[in-house]
Image 1: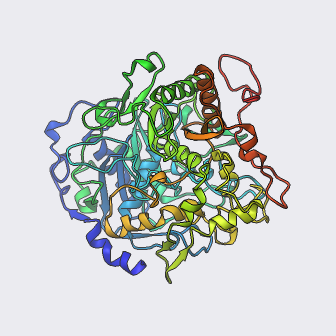
Image 2: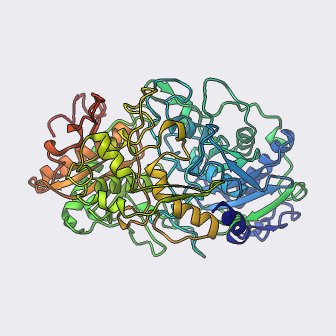
Image 3: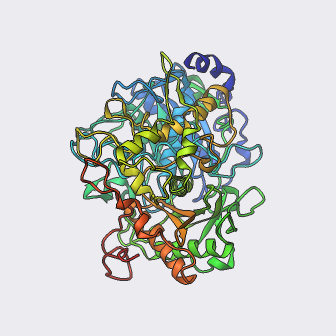
Length: 628
């Protein structure tokens, strides 16, 4: 398969190196018309802004004696410009540094533009008006220990989030001629390789910049030191004048008593204020690049977030009046996911679940936002037992990554709580890894592994209710999570072969479609071969299944804030909806929840949800999830 990947890439991506930026003194660059530029808009990047970011990044790369590929995106992931310096590496290698074979490890034939785009999207998607996260922040919160390099610590709070925003997602959009409706897909999911930063104008998040100059796409496995990473420094230079407000940066935010990282160094070798303007020396330095399915040449302006053109706008449904709800819309400005009936839930029930969760979110004290005391900002979705999205709402400033992830979470809880989850997994073909030599991984094998681990030959066919926290417990390379030297959970690869690019069932489910999209330009939707899991699964907390009596009828997924907040909003939002509806729907009966399970020989019970202490801004209530 790796040979096929190598052969297919030049055609599949249609990478056109067009020398459209060699002159024109600040023009559009390869077709952009500077005469159509509008005055600087606090809510969107202009063509001139994108040119400035690229020019500043090029100047720093030259000062670093590096050859970089540079990408700029807007807040909903539209690629606004991609610039490849002369001599920049044409491809990059995926390498976690763990010496692992399998998964995406070792792929070394993908165009560098894809890594730059993924980094830029990560900087934009993980950030908001209340928090500014970078790919270095992502690196800190997705690995097997939090913090990376600290032994015997639980995994990162967003463990698994890198396998989201995929090019096969049925939630994120594919670039469509004439529209920039987001959220857009990412070619490689979310990145944890330093070199991706968010961009702000007048305090408003407007996009991200991504850099690759060292031909390696990996992770920093030990954050106890301070790096001078060229990719990160070039991104910092590019973002000068568009930097995140200091009080919102990750290094002002704590999780589990640990301060997050924003950048390791901002000691630049150049002065961005005197960087040669775009269109003067930049034409000598390199060229704009158009990446098939994403864009990048000509440079285009971004869209203003919160307007219909961005794909995210305020909700006009009277059911959510006064709640600050936002929705996703299509090119005709129609709500993509209005509340509707599913195979076992009514439209009214779906509406009430969304309202209940939104009410909890608006009261909840945020974990990852500034200033302190801000309300949680999340995306909330309800799916039926087949994974069909029955409704989706957001708070105004929820990070974009949470859209795809909230759906992943809801579908994961619904799928694994089904009576036929085992048979569906057993029906899938193996994951084909594009390694040398080619290797495979049996998806069906996860079923007997889980049954043996749990000591239950009926697991995934017995009606046990799984929340995402429960599944996350058994999708880690150690069980219990954070106890080094113990065996892996049954949904994870053993630690000796585990990496963020080879994490187990989560990656295996999407591997074949992801490789096909990279090798053959397959941009069709559906990541797993199962209609119930159209955008894959997610393995960190924030979802629970929905029941009518003892019968599974759907699930709710929440994403965008701390994982305990996400858990609480899903769990209490559903409980509140059930109460308002006269208990026609509810959380799973306590007797069938996954927290009744103690995997044999471990002495450690699975968790169902975990709610934070004193979580509300308007009360001092404790133990708010008790009794439901």
